[in-house]
Length: 245
Image: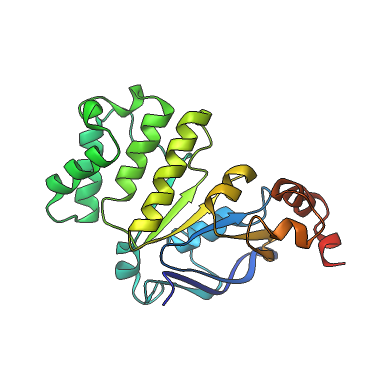
């Protein structure tokens, strides 16, 4: 059974279609890249998976739980980290983890928080306010927060966008390790095609709310006469219709 199954998902705003009947899945131990230019429908798709937006039609199933009919159980199995959703900067690392552990109803919360502090090398920052940390340190705290409830599905929206190359490499390695060793699947969005090629086992290209292309990030470009994933991304952004010719 896939960790995430999206079937005929659509989001309509009046006469505008933001997401147009897309279907895909994410399996356990798999990192899937959800790619596309701004306005392609990526964030709308993620917000529907997170239950923030209600689909106009279609379904989202997380770890066997239909989001529409078993919302609480589905969302208990989900978490996310996004560069545009920083943790409260006036709270310490420990306070942030404590607040979210309470919100998620994490059992044995202190033990779980302590384990994540060690896993993400955050012990020295336990009592520091998140707003005073570097971008890399804040990203590690955000990932620790996202793993508090041991999610089966982890959504990552531009997780390394504000990081220097060394910090970004560290975060990529950590996420690959998580996907390989934990019973989870990862849906990853990014505009960094070199990063996507390194991290993802499969990519989905969205264009105008539809899945235009799907395949392995290292072989997909060659199928369309492109040398790199970045070349393919540029074509999807500028001339998507030519890919079907």
